[in-house]
Image (tube, rainbow, N blue to C red; front, side):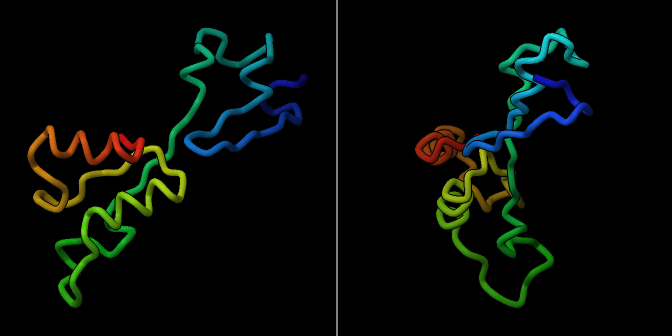
Length: 103
């Protein structure tokens, strides 16, 4: 197996991206990084759905639609957007995110 920059392969999985060659190579450029920390999650933001304080032309989609679609697209997390768009109660927000495996 080759290391980064030596023709390694990239394995893309739902919920994260891992480099198979980096995770299994003994000649890694980053030998002190654990295999778990090599997994990378990709997040999105409500502004990708048109949710913004600057967009006043149309009603933005509800936060549940944004969370549902972000989870369905394979994102591992979302930003909260403008204050008040997502639930401001920590327990409610935690429940909404965890039910979709988002952070």
